[in-house]
Length: 84
Image (cartoon, rainbow, N blue to C red; front, top):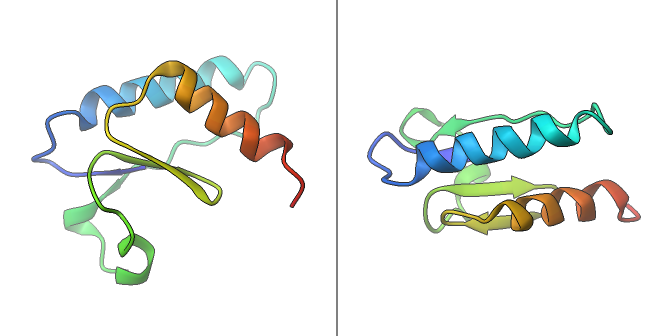
């Protein structure tokens, strides 16, 4: 997930995503939350399509803004159970 020090909702979003991941890790231990601070990122290709913060990327899907728990769970389920 992408965050920034000046982002008003990033801390809440990080906490929510970690809570969902911890809950789902009881069933699927393959969920890792990686927080990337945009002001520290030098790889422009990785963050070029981030239009607002916080941005939560799971696979090829992305949620922008402060998500609901259900949105994050759905994003993870779709990524885990979709055919690649």
